[in-house]
Length: 315
Length: 270
Picture (cartoon, each protein chain N blue to C red):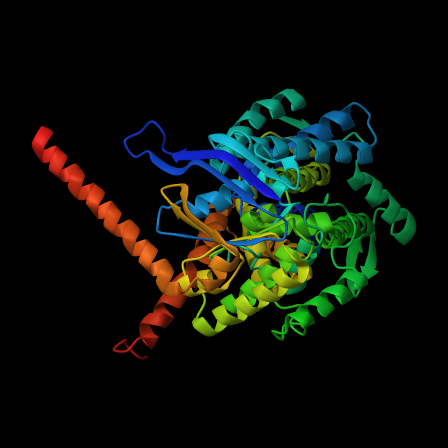
């Protein structure tokens, strides 16, 4: 049960990565690789501040702002300097590796002796739910109240973020941002500055991703300079699963789908690991999954067209 | 009023592929006037519209609209003064967003985008009324993605978006060229209604001689980036499509003559 709660908690924290990837990849159609560096940046900034005795909330907010800054740099490189979107992301991601090492001071730091949002939420849960060092009864299962607290806190953060994004994307500014991704020519003709909106969108996306990094570091109890590797594909896999789950392009459902996709994906990974999958194969399997999810719909459509065409083979 | 003076644009300048799209073009369009521009391929019609809208930066010359020099303004700033309908129905709208969301964006054209609701109940009521006035039956489809509508329906909505806030200049860039004849007629009817009702200063580019002859109160024919023929008033009213075809034929003959003279000279001197 502890394993399940842990998987759900991490899935909910990484839902912020999925939401960030949803903004860059789906809303802006911008393949933003900065995400890989932003996760670590968020973790590094939060860890550095926590180790200096900062309030965990301040540390998370600073991590989010640092991620937003990184996203803005990618946006500016693309929109103002005319650098290809992929290359702009690669440049910033590469630069962030050094930045993250400087912020962390070394390749990884432990956060076991400092107060984090995770320890705070665990403490609150223990105070409210009781159970002490042991467990409490949840639908017949004995669960540690601290694990439940961390899960509820992560759920609250994921739900609040998705809700806030839903409201934001229905404002005039948010609607203009969505239109920019859909048709930049149209938004320019309506007086919108597409370039600024792209920069803002990438700032928002990377801000969320860095926030996820900050929360993940606190959940895991350490920040590592390598922890961002594969996060982009992770986020993309979550978005794809979410789209399959909700089967709709409506804004609210798409956001909810990204959160659900992240949780489900994390659960699937936990189950696969439990069944003996080599953890070293995790990223390979994830990349393979995304590849299949991207290629399969097109291949199926092609097959259907071929079968429907006169003279095509009929099963 | 729109005023262009000495506007020049050369694409691929300084290369063997240099092409002069606008050659020191000067044009005055009076307030409330509807000018129809025609011309062959490469005559500069679309570049003229793009230069005015800010999609293309001009090499030289001045563009003044409603008393403000907009020559160096970016496209999005000019959008506060200019409404535009493109040839391609897909260019003027965001296909993945609903009809209502597209219209809500147009309702604030040129304004700063803030954190107010894009679709408050008041906006929603107004856009329902205005869409109903179009008479194309889309008032009950406001929450459908605009990408699911036909080209004609999208063009009708783009026209509504371009004129939602009264523009100082309406640019129509062959906006019925991609539609079937029935839809094209419908969009032309809507265009005529809105331009006449709002007395909009309009610059319309078309390939259709029939449209050029019957629409607008002034006609200009462009050729190699210059205004070759400019007619208005009673003379424009008497114009028939056949007259325009005759003029095109004359240009073609002249071009061929130029080509044959050049060939002859090349034979003699090169």
